[in-house]
Length: 165
Image (cartoon, rainbow, N blue to C red; front, top):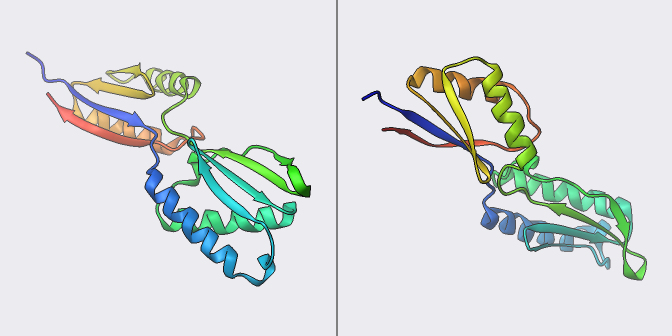
């Protein structure tokens, strides 16, 4: 029987690293002079970051600090999708930032279409929030990974579960 190789395309973020980055961000915000006496905070609720500050400038500055901490901890910024800045209670502003876990179905369809349009001898199938690519030749699978890395789908992607059956 023919040998079948496969790998999965996933989009996952280590939430513990996000929490560590949040703790570091809040520690730095409390120590910085431009945030003295402010009610700026960032917290994680149900897979979503919530940034709150007195004005948009402080919110932007806090976001810059957060992004530096996330990058330093290996969390890709593509996994964050920023909502619009909205007014909150007490004259403050708030911004919701969902953390992407799993590939959205529209992006998964786009990835599968891209792989099929490449006319390589592989099959791509959507399995929940992952995409499984399988084929006979390992070199072809490596070529698919290289092509996917070369194209920007606007989401964070990892290539896992590379197996030979």
